[in-house]
Image (tube, rainbow, N blue to C red):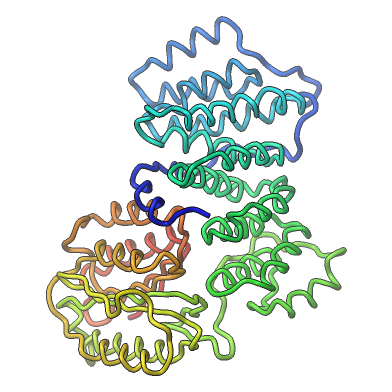
Length: 474
């Protein structure tokens, strides 16, 4: 199990490579080159041209050099990409390098992948962890991410063996790369990823680490396959809190069926359809509708067992059409808290020019704590400015097991450690890369909300980058 304190210390050093993936993999591992062609190898002329271009100050030129290597399927091309492409400071070159390694791997025969590609890549990963003088973890994360993009059980077997040898300080680096690689597989909707599910679910992190477990379930939800649906239904039977909703939403996206988070209903529905089911194609991944006694907050169902409400109490919240926005927000928050089942643990963070938490950690949603929380909310008065970033960081830091934040604001960030909205989204997403808690955002726009257009865009991006949903309230 990864130590939470060591995770927080190392997160600042872990550089997470994000962005689109441009290369679609083949459906199966190759035994020989496609269409009867022989696998290409690096010739002298191309080698000289590539080495010259990789010394260029222009990132675009270096990227083109890496892309030219991607057309080969030999060890030398792979080594150049590893040594120079993944080390590059330009994000576009790193992305091209990750794609290139995928292409080189898919162009190799099966035996070459097992005997050359996997040992070469995992050997470099092991070398990074043995290197006591490593100045930062970014290259190690990139190497592991590249390996984790391979939809091959043999690669993951090797990665898991490396993990067994790591100390607690190194494990967050390993996990960051693995989660990034699984994200890439999910984005590509690689059908081969289904073969990984049994192996991934047997790793210790599947039981001990929420972020890993959520990522595996989302990977399953990206591939329309009977095996994916069966896997998710099995997981839904034992899932709790926010993960339960995540799994149900993935099942809905795969199948188009709306059975909510009821595992028995899903199992009954799937049992008679598994062998003949025709997947409907792209189905929107959205929030499950609240059913029965499921609590909700501004129309967003609350499934999390551990959650934090983050409430803007800045001066602009005193504005409103018929009444101040703060009064509307307080009523809705008190109502939502009143609906929480007693098994839930919750907290409230309020922010204006400063940040304050109602409770020191998380409190059980039993009557006396609900009453105390309602009193705390009722006494809030709008004042000061909008210290958005610091409020989000404080809410995330209240407890390591927080599953979801519900962030409400009526104005763009105006003060704090970080004020620029794009930088806030980037920083929060980076800090949330391992934890993978859901950040839902609610924008109050009625009665002349400050900078409504900029606020809406910011809150949309904040939610999208952190597995959440955005609600606009006029």
